[in-house]
Amino acid sequence: MTVATAFVLMMTIPGLALFYSGMVRKKNVLATMAQSLAAVAMISLLWVAFGYSLTCVGGGALIGSLCRWRTGSGAAACWPAGTCWILPAASWCICRPVPAA
Image 1 (cartoon, rainbow, N blue to C red):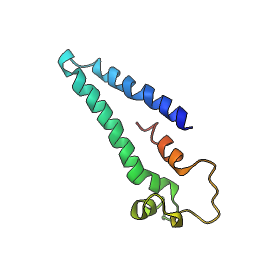
Image 2 (cartoon, rainbow, N blue to C red):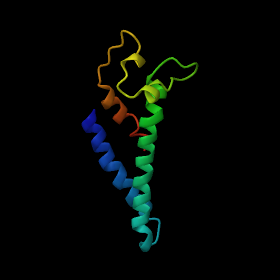
Image 3 (cartoon, rainbow, N blue to C red):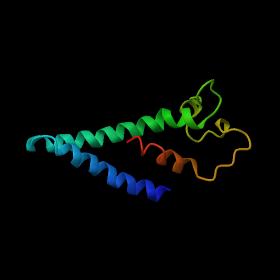
């Protein structure tokens, strides 16, 4: 899963940068590529900071809680009792924001 995520990111980031760079003048190509990279980085950081905790940690009324954000990513108290994950939490956290980017 991690290798597939890396392949998708290696295709998505340059693909978006080249697509949007084709729509601007030659002098703005580098700035447009940098903005595409910055947007993907910002989305990924927001996912790690808030989205992962809100989707993967139960306990909220409608969505999850910010338990992982408050206590850190290694807090075992946030996981429901008896939960057995097939994938490591880090692999799941890296894989999920790729379609959003």
